[in-house]
Image 1: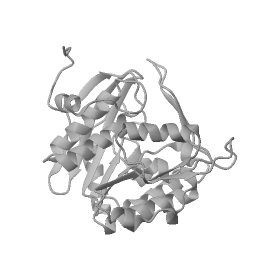
Image 2: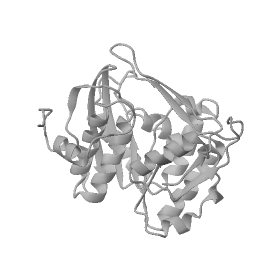
Image 3: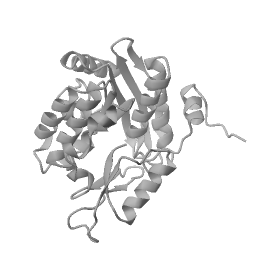
Image 4: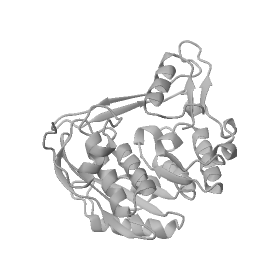
Length: 303
C-alpha cells in the first residue's frame, strides 16, 4: 500500500488500522499537519445507511487531503514494483480527488505494467467527486486514459456507462431489472475496445428497498470466458457500504489463489454479501466464512 497521510491523530489511527489488517506501512508518506487542516488533512466519508424506503446517502469530504496532493514523483515506482509486488489496485475515486491524482495513478499503473504486476481498477463512479471538475465527460476522459494499463477491470451497473461510455441496453434508469445478457454484451464490447483487459467483472444489484437488495455478479476472463456468481435475490442488507470493495478484494483473492474465474467471482460475490451484513465499509469476514458461503453454505448457527 502506498498512501499519503497528514501526521496527526487521525493519520496515526489510520496507520493503526492498517497494522491491524496486517498491511506493510513502510510506504506511508507522512505530510506535516498545521493543526487545523488549512493546507493538508485526512479525508472523511459520511454515510447515512438508509432503511426501507429511505435510500442510503453518502457524502465525501475529501478536499485538501494529503492523498489528493500526491505527485507522480513522490514515489520511486520502479523500485517499488521491482521488489516483487504481485498486485496493484486503484480506481476512479482516487483518480477524481485532484488534477494530480490521475497522473499519480497513471505513473503507478504504468510502472506496475512494466514490472509484470497485475493491475486492477474499480471504476467506482461518484458524481459528487466529478461534478466540480468536468462531470461525466471528464470522468470518461480520465478513466479511458487509465484503462489502457488495466488487467482486471471492475465496476457496478452504473460504472461502465458513466466512467467508460459503454451503454447497457435494456436496463432501466432505476436498475430494477438487471438482465445478465445485456451485461455480457456490454462486457464483450469493452473487451474489444480494450484488448489489455484480461478479466472484466461487474456486480449486479437490484434495489427493492435500502434493506432488501438482489445481489449477484458476473465476470469474464479472456482465457475462460464468462462465469456468473450465485444469485442472491432479496438479500437482507444491514449496511451496503463496502459491498463493492469487498467484491473486488474477494475477486482478487480468487484470481491469485484459486483455479477458475467461476471460483473467483463466487468468492467476490460472497465476500460482498457478507460485508453488507456488518456496519461500516471494512469487511470483518474470515476466509473460512467466505469459502463457506461461496460453496453454498447457509446461515445456520455455528456453535
